[in-house]
Image 1 (spheres, rainbow, N blue to C red):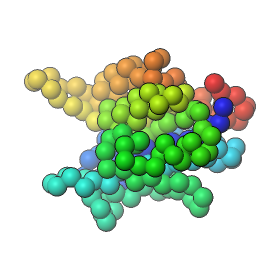
Image 2: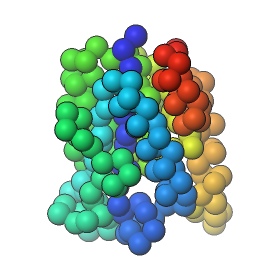
Image 3: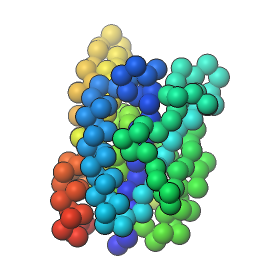
Length: 188
């Protein structure tokens, strides 16, 4: 089964000093960069997804801003596809499905930001579309949330979403496991 690496929304606004900084984004991006380097070494197709907000009053990922740019740690190189999206689900109103079909991809290696939004939406959509998904949990990041008077720490938000995806929607693993699989030429 052909594999591809899908890097979702690792963009400047999610880093310290950005308009929507996530907890642990620098460490997650560092691990994502290691997977990206391994994928490039082993000739996997790499697809980057970049969220550009068109919603009036949006506080981040604004067109033309520094914050909307893909972070330097995982910046695309010549020949790598960049998909621009405007919704959490990377498949919605993009050419992602068509690009994956053209490549003959059946399995996606996924990482990116935010765990509880675009990663969740895209992984579920990918699984529903029939892709096998391997999700590098430690190459993703989240932020603290609150609902109904209950505050939820970023670490717990991240863990809850990874737990919800594990099994039915994805095989959740570490970035290092993906690097080792790519080096060994193994996987699902």
